[in-house]
Length: 373
Ligand SMILES: Nc1ncnc2c1ncn2[C@@H]1O[C@H](COP(=O)(O)OP(=O)(O)O)[C@@H](O)[C@H]1O
Ligand SMILES: N[C@@H](CCC(=O)OP(=O)(O)O)C(=O)O
Image 1 (cartoon, rainbow, N blue to C red):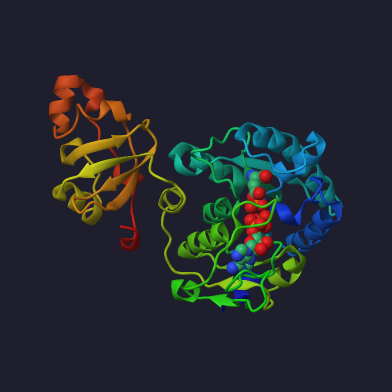
Image 2 (image 1 turned 180 degrees about the vertical axis):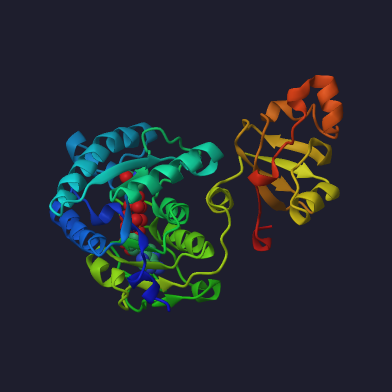
């Protein structure tokens, strides 16, 4: 087992970071894109379905816009992404065409991973593209993503896509050849060949990335946790070792999969979302939501904090003062104080039938792991 699962995967997600695709001057590095596509096309030609999650839109937009460094403000980042994404996808289109393969651009937002209808839609589109023999090239839809609800890096997006597409393996390609136990630029840091569980990550220093990448190792390890938690094995290595990694060779860091398969939409909620507000629950509501997995009704809520809109993620706090769950709320923050402590039937007769609904539906709730309580 182990790396054999990567070698024999019938469907895989490969994520490549900005630093592996662009030059420091903010241009596409054509040779490196072609080298990556050589490896992916060879694998595709053996019948494996490949989904490519590619960063690099912002980095590839810097040169054409005459920017020297990655802009700090969101609007300029979005402008750079808008220019760079076109350049990037054009490059992939011609590079894959050398092998007679076509690509399909898929731009996703964090919202698409969360809201039921968007999520199903993205899932259907990706499945259809794969059936048609296309290589989907996925990126975050940077031009519309807002600061509050934005992946920013593509590592976690790749993990959610791996689960969404029921991939058999995920490969994260970066500019570093493995996860190291300390900063890889410092002498004495050693490669970690395998991660079997959280104990193998104890004491590991997860630093930030270079000047063009974003998340550094923190988001890659988070992504590996999301994917392995959903049963998908992960290899993390340098883009230069892509061929070896896909062949199951002993390069980079291999993260062993766990056995759980939680719903994809909620993976994002549990691992990558932050609550936009808080609902404080009484003991009975905590028991109903956490133990009996029921919907949250207004009757069990004592207090509301924060300024959120219907559909936003909110954290549910128990009487102990710790968050116990997170969910997508059905009401705006301003509407909730009037509902608190009242039964749904009472609300319906006082305020109208549209108020006869749960505050958060059970399908939109994830229970948080005890260690983050
Ligand atoms: N413990 C660690 N092991 C390996 N790399 C690390 C570690 N801590 C920080 N890094 C840095 O993370 C960088 C990769 O992250 P990032 O720049 O976001 O890549 P990408 O653009 O490929 O997503 C590497 O260049 C490396 O210097
Ligand atoms: N969606 C962004 C990703 C930003 C980014 O730098 O991500 P990464 O290189 O994966 O750390 C882009 O295409 O520029």
